[in-house]
Image 1 (cartoon, rainbow, N blue to C red):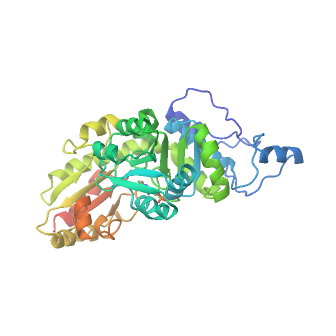
Image 2: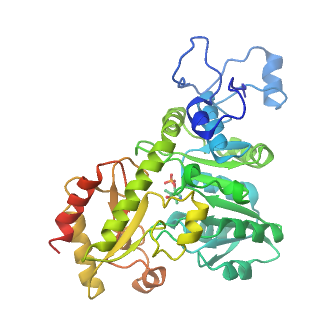
Image 3: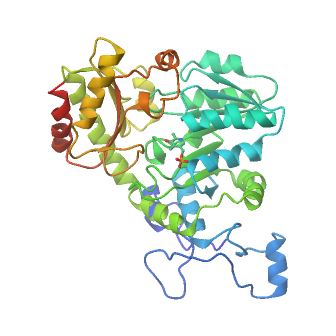
Length: 403
Ligand SMILES: *Cc1c(COP(=O)(O)O)cnc(C)c1O
């Protein structure tokens, strides 16, 4: 759409606060929120040309909106891709990707540690339309390779994973996909482009839940796919126009403004998470801490290389216990003792949010499936926010000291 007046070759931090569609005639300094579903056409011929795709210009809310375009430009610049398409949520971004790239008879390889709804969407919903899939262990490259078939069109990974923060090798998976004539898509929710730019390591598509760190303050649902201009314009946009999974302009405005502080938030939250992880690892009531920034993490070296020497803002830990029943009651005790931090199913907020995966995100699994996934009854996930570290510790100690 309208090309922005920003000099080329600026740093990502600058683009995150500057890149947007051109200002209106009023010269607003903060980007305008265009709450409109339709656009008045300058002439019948211009309208015809816009509908035919021969002229730039907005036609209807399902096909585009200037506030949404601003968000798309900014996120593409941060991820280092030519283009981006925004969606109503992270799951609708994945739905748009699968609808656009796959047909009956195609095959997808993906990690068994991916986001729960992603697994259901690929393994159950798309299976009804004849798309087959194979789930593999997150970090086992040989298993990924072995799962590839002649009809494999897509490898889909997420790193670090939720809630155990397993890290997979993006460059290795990209090579594997390309050697098989397939694409690699990467869910970059946890690391964000501040820590990790998957396209720089060979990934073809970067998927986001804007609901998480891009908004950063737990206000709106949003999603996006970042990729080449050809893929966005020729594959994703036509499906988007007909399926209508568009991001609402208001939500686009919120995530657009969220991107302005993404860099400092990620660095600050990641630093707090690192300190909290080290502190928890020393606590006598804690059996184990899962955090890529710790030397004890099985993929620590790869994580530091792949994630700009930072571990991210999510960690999880197991409380010490003799059996699953005791573990569950101890974890519940820690969560019920909180007075400041939130017991809340979300992440990527400035507020620190804690969850009990075994009874929530992974509650539908059998105990045996949870054991395989490593999601014990004593596991607590902490999505670290921006509160003072001492206050986080004091709040956790309320429960940890009275177990
Ligand atoms: C939250 C999340 C999603 C789904 O995003 P929504 O915006 O909730 O639809 C996908 N992947 C990961 C890793 C997530 O954390």
